Length: 304
Length: 159
Image 1 (cartoon, rainbow over the protein chains, first blue to last red):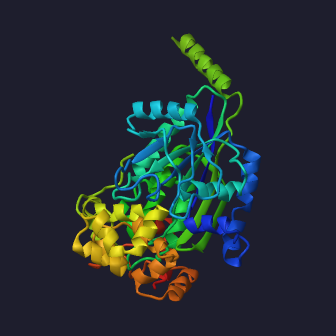
Image 2 (image 1 turned 135 degrees about the vertical axis):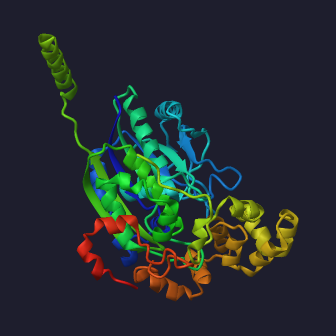
Image 3 (image 1 turned 30 degrees about the vertical axis):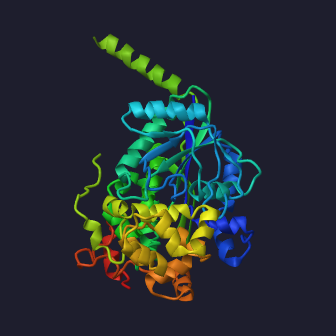
């Protein structure tokens, strides 16, 4: 059976992509950001996921104001990088996993999450920058990626609670997929930033650190944050952190925090990154469970 | 587990210096944002730069005179007020060849250097920037309070 083994969150600042594409990663300003992902690259190389489910948002690239799906799952075989106005980013085409994606779609829609399904979709920096941060710049992405685009552009985005519950439904869907696959879920965007209006430039590190702490230990608390509080404390565009809660919902309640990185700024944004692993289940747990159940039944029989 | 409480009124209008892109703004700004989308194509960028007023009049006759004026004058806050969304209006800035921080500086009424320095110093603080009415001025965040022991309350840095 397929299983979710870990979750990764990362900011997806476009300027990070531009720094990679223009070979400026060695400049001191950018070194500070990229160095923070060195350990993540090692972790990724060791973990070798079979599939990534990447929760991200489109920035007026694949979707404009013509169609605004709240949750759009990519079920295509591949997703080309979008032309964001400067030509497409020079990154590999993202290969999907149509079979698992279709299975997830079927499972979560029957669980009452009414997804939009995309059989043709381009992906922008929101998806490709986090891939670069953990994989560097390979010729091909090392594994298939299922994109899940979330509307955080037009208010209201889905609530944090809804996102968390969708994560739960995705976990259930993955765990009922018959193939033996190790899946890692990415939540992208954030952390605090506002790039519009007179309040542009807002950063709230205290809030970001508290968000990271709770993400690991007490994510249900984060599902109670209203959009008003998120926008007020983390910036109008910081509201996109609801996407991290899809990742968290897809993990077990108790997780191990493997790594965390936080730095200010990358362009206009606080960069936050965390790796959470599900605890390894004892290999023979199901058998042990059965034994216990049998033992309980036995006791019950004796007593009655 | 219950979801967070959300109200239908525009409580977010209380956040200073912020234009939340809601359905009303999106409806008013539809053609404005679609104009910005047209700038994703190189030939359109060229046509626009060759004769901006003509491009707007011919290709986007539904734009209001106020929206055309704000586009031609590159009034980025006004564009947000008139229904533009920052991810779309940023395409106008890119067409002019400006980095995003140029737009951020314009919107915040500073120079690009001052804005870049502000970001390097850790960005704009939320203290004093929470609430127009003052209603939420000292609200803080529910998660930040909970993450700290009560005794540290007095040490909370302001500014």
